[in-house]
Structures are given as structure tokens and as C-alpha cells.
Length: 107
Image 1 (cartoon, rainbow, N blue to C red):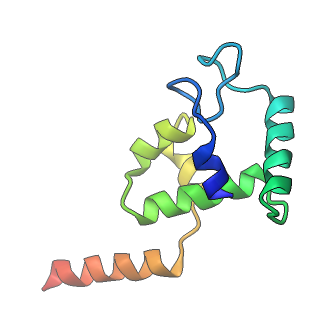
Image 2 (spheres, one colour; image 1 turned 120 degrees about the vertical axis):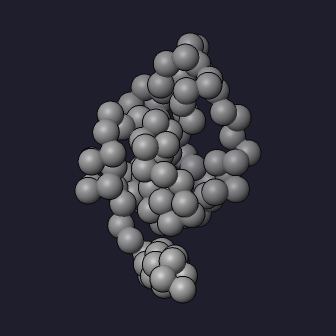
């Protein structure tokens, strides 16, 4: 799925899935769901919802050190509260990395 997404041209500067006719606007909900379903079939990926993808993306980016206020803009959130409370799910790797940072600060 990731390889298929990387091959897809990015339309517009503000959206990963910009509208074909006007890339400055997001793709319509109907068009996005058709595209998403087609990607699932083409890549033989068990159907995952775009929301799962959003949760996973948010968690991966925070675990890689992207600051929540920076990620807020990329994901289109108005505040970091929802981003962190709803979309971020700590991973074992992220927790371990955070533990190592805390321990190294005390050394």
C-alpha cells in the first residue's frame, strides 16, 4: 500500500489527496473513498480504514520525533489536544525511545 501511495502523484501543496480539478482544495469524500477502495484492491491489502491509517501515521511521526505542533499542521488539526488524545497511540518502540531519552538526561 505504501509503495502504491508513493507512486501516486501528489496534487496541490496543502493536501496529499488534492482534488483533480482544483488541487488547492481537498479531494471530495466520495472520490477519496473510491480511490482508497481501489488502492486496497490493487495492492491486495486487507481493508483498513483511512482513520486507521491516520492513527498509525500520527503515532509513527511522534515516535520519530516530529513535534505535535508541527504534525498538527500536516494533519489539518486545529490543536494538538485532539491529535494527541485521539490519534496518537504510544508504541513499544516509542516508549522505549522515550525511556532512553529520560535515562540519558540523568546521566
